[in-house]
Amino acid sequence: MYAKKIFMLACIPASVLTSCGGDDGTIKDIEITTDTISSEVRVNFDLLRVNIPPPGTLTNKLSAAGISYNKSHLNPSGKAGSYTTNYQKAIGLGVYGADLGFAASYNQPQDALEYLGQMGKLAGDLGISNAFDHEFSQELIKNVGKPDTFQLMLDKAFDKAERNLRSNQRVAVSVLMVAGGWVEGLYLAVEGLNTNPKDPKAKDVYTDIHVHCHAFDYVFKLLEEYKGNPDCAKLLQEMEPSRTQLVAIGKNPKIGADELPKIRETVLNLRNKVVS
Image (cartoon, rainbow, N blue to C red; front, top):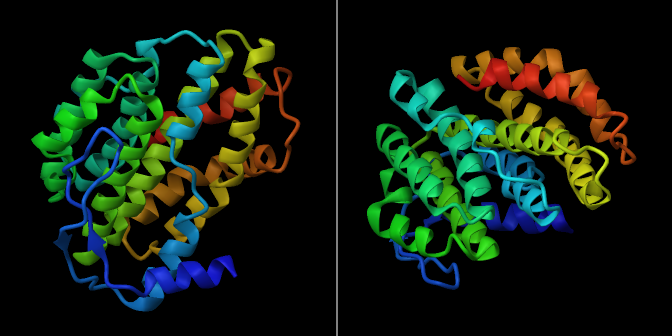
């Protein structure tokens, strides 16, 4: 029934959200584009995409668990200037989205603004600047102190970017963005836990890491769907060595502090390969 619902939604011509957000996180639907990818590709994308949680589901749990904010865990914003290929820029945009959500969940407006600025530049280079334009950025920063609203607005902005890329037959760029955000969200959660792995308040974070890794199979399948694209094929190759370990984590709902060192080794290796 759920898959049927997704199928019905996927067959509706894409309606791209404008970037005018309000305090309640709403984004008005006034910019319309025609979805130019085939219905089969669109359905396959949506059926896989819906199973991949946004990185904010992890980073919000870190702050709720009382884990201290550490900016050094984030991908340095200055790196964006060295990204020259669409591969780096698309992955980087997803990564910075996770970093932005992390900063916002700790009510760090200056850091959030810093990452949002770099995201705007990368989005412009990728031809999706309207997803993170000045007006939307201003509204987003106003809601830094409201984690749920902020994450809702950020998720909708990425949804808009993904829809725009699909309407322009650049699904591969969208897949790279999704994968980049997934990797960074997992990395931030693991590094945060490593500061106090046995804290009883961190139990929910371990649960979410398990759920996040369970979604790895869907990330991998997305990349496999578009492996005819050289960039997706490259990322698929980079992620392959971590596949067995991540799938195992996703199958073990009882992971805890004892398993963290091995999990951290796997995630660090993955992040070092994927995030420039």
